[in-house]
Image 1 (cartoon, rainbow, N blue to C red):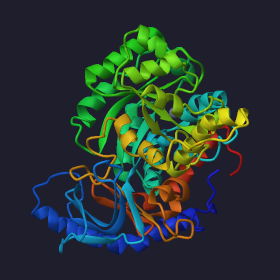
Image 2: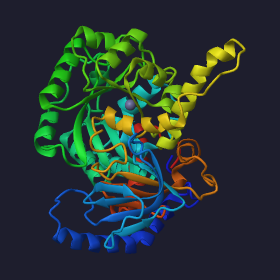
Image 3: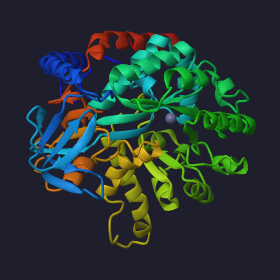
Image 4: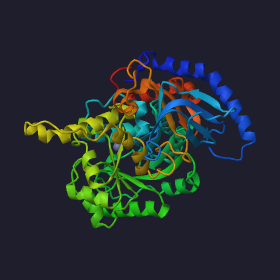
Length: 496
Ligand SMILES: [Zn+2]
């Protein structure tokens, strides 16, 4: 239950945290806005990015770009939302300077699978099986959501992603109960200021109709979205289809849905292989495999199916904490890697698990290491090396995630010419200092509390450990009321 006395990582109440954050940041935000206004007046950029130049100074820059590697005491220069240079001692007198000495600068994380709307009902599904989730969340709670609840869930869910250093999410939206729900959910992402692939899914008003071997095709409203809400693909938000696919709909529906997405020129993400095998084989039989398909979970797919995913250029999004809890199977990251599929990591359901990529990435990495080590353990031998490495894991949460979402030319690494989605992690906190290996510090030591500063498309959305989002600050009470009402009307409230 959302409780007003709930404490955040900082030990402050959530309410105080956001209020203090906004209040303390007001001067920064106003100064930044004024400077941005001034800059915009003589800028021809016209991008959504912050046009005030920013200079991130003297950081340990982990570029996740093989051509640039790790740079020490290095500056990152950002202008018009773009990374312009990564060099030592850059001179930029008009830039807003962010001191990154004692900090690690990494690409903003890519959370490849998130049902952002569920942030209004946090902490209710920690003991649920997958079947309970389908019944309670997609059969009951999702029916109680109104457009305003979708807005609040997406706004706060996305703001918290930014707080946690994640700058891009694939928002898998399955409460498209009306065009109003969908519109408001998109507005929530917009108001958060996050980069997102909005995967429009089915309504959440009738789980039997939409999720049990459904014979109903994807809602036609996605055509309106493609036409009116996402006429171009150069903004922070782009469109995808959250399709049900062969595990949840008939062959005919699967074929029609994927053909519709291809007609619209948008990628498809679908949950597959968490109930049983055969889904990818079915897609192959239907002639539908392609590099525009993103597969979520995949735990119970066969080896042959993973090979089909890899050969067709598909991506796999593993969400280890949800998969381990809900009985889907062991995370399939290793199978995806072996088959040559694009590996990515997501959170999935914030109603039961940690919503930050630090936790999910660490779990994905160590579970995969455990799986690889097991044969030596069973033979009573000692392992010879540890794989995947921490650096490889960081790629899963950055450049590989970007590839999975089709955004690798824009984001996923700190590379001049890419958009400035950047996370700065304090290396001088009690749990991060001293930094001997910046990648290991990020992947295996750090957490949300160490995320000092976050930029999305050049816009500073978090600085000095404080989130700046006035809309969220002004609506926190409404999120709590929304969450309480939904649970009350679902009959799932455990307290008031
Ligand atoms: Zn999911």
